[in-house]
Image (cartoon, rainbow, N blue to C red):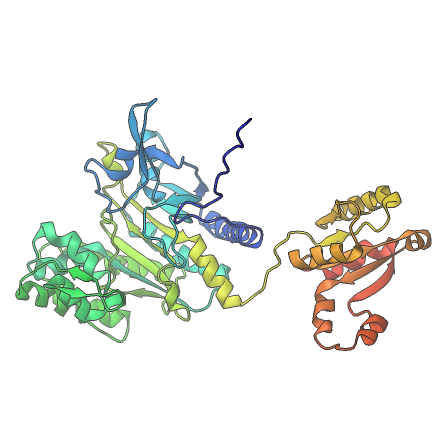
Length: 477
């Protein structure tokens, strides 16, 4: 007796997801709009593979990026491979591998990236990013272009009030030097500073010192064990405040002006502020924030981050910075680079919450129902006519289905219109159109069945010759 084949459980890998219909269309539309802004600034498209050598992703020392990545040993190549965790490291590898590439090189790229993060609400191990970068110049004009482009992207997408905060990694380094924090502790301290928005100043103080108990999970968060003097030095920097960017720039200058190594970052902060204004950046939305810290190890200059003022729970929706030493990981050549990354999925979720729109699941505008199997050729000609006129149309394909089942199919998929045509209508040169959305709304106000039958809400009859023009006016994608 033959054994029955073993059934495989159709389960998803932890932290992954499947999407259907509307979210995919919205993502494509969003990417197209972001692309149009980037090309306006002269950025051109680039594609790199999702698989790289593990050492490409991690650096000469494993874990140098601070990211946990998907890796495996590929037996055929006898090499450790990994899935990219961002789009910047592959860019640096590409530039280093193409030394004759014309520079400055300005590129945009979009695609999935993978991180072994702990899954949570809105947090996945595979997600889509959109990056813009300029490689091959150390001018603050390049950084200013990225900042202004970020603002124009958010404006193009019609998002609510946003703020783009920016800082300079050299300002943070100078602040830590002033506090006498050892250089080998700088990255760890900056990562703690980066949490201030979430854990507050007191949480930062505790993590710099003995550690703290997380209020939500109750877990013990280990501290860095810095002495009190160094902690107070860091906290005095974090307490800087001013009414506007001019005042903040003055305050930072007064605090750090005499610190060794602060002169160049302070000068570049002034240049960047000036260039952002010259390129049309909105000073009310592009703000200098000396406390801003981003966790990536490879940032060496200006850093920036965007968030939505009215939707703060989405956190950072864009971010980036200057990485003057990343390309040299792969080459003896020292090349400056600066870029920003857009979290497409997070941005989509924010846009959906802001607009509050209900999207239909199907791409179809019109369903042509099949009431009479002898007329299948006529129905096929009608659906072809609608498609030729630029509408997304489909024809009911299952045999022996009642009209009610066909209309229920259209309603459940969110198809807004259904065409009904029997032999009588065909002989008269007419069709009946059901506006399913209008009918559903009207049904909420009609409780009596006889009234429903007599009024037929959301339904009208029209000459077939006029159908295409009428539907074009009614359908809004």
